[in-house]
Length: 285
Image 1: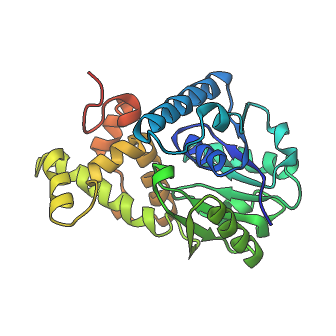
Image 2: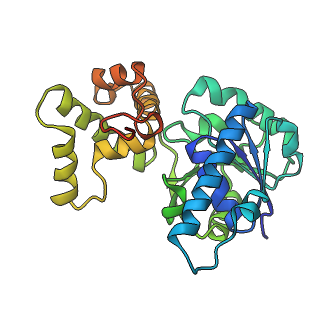
């Protein structure tokens, strides 16, 4: 079975990346977000990305931005999802926002449609409980930047059927990716470890143990990571990091997941990382 029409909910960094990957691999995408302004910004970002891709891959056969964007329908109406084969939700990592979306998807999407969440920390079983199709709800945790990451963490909820797991892996293969299946737990594997690492690195800054540059340098040069934890935080977005750590703290009730006060202060100040131009590093003049 080939999945042809994919709904993507949320036109932020992850939603744009997932939509682009799908469009470039021959899928028709229906990208949904709440305002036309957000959708217009997403379209401009995708056009710029495609332009840069053309420059970096001169002489290679690459789809034009017109061909790729022609595969994506930008809309603020959930009603457009009545024909989708599969949905991937990428909205802000906050329960109060996500809990409103799943009943809507459940009511509009065809009964055979699989609903996947690209959540960082929220349990899939909890999201599935908001629908009448718990066996068809699954986690698909993409990494940023989506186009460059060959592996996706696939999370099996309590009720997720084996057929749903296999179909999720099949869609990933169609996208040129591999899925690694893990069982449901807040943060799963990747973010349960990563968020603790980033949070502890921020504590090192707060305690003036080291600088951001040296923390990242140690991880890259001594441990072999491609990016340090603070560079990674800036790439993900410090607001998303904070929401994720707060979610882990809420779920586990353990002090090790307490968000660093410096992280909270930076988010309050609008220092989100790359997307705002400044986080632990500067990205604009």
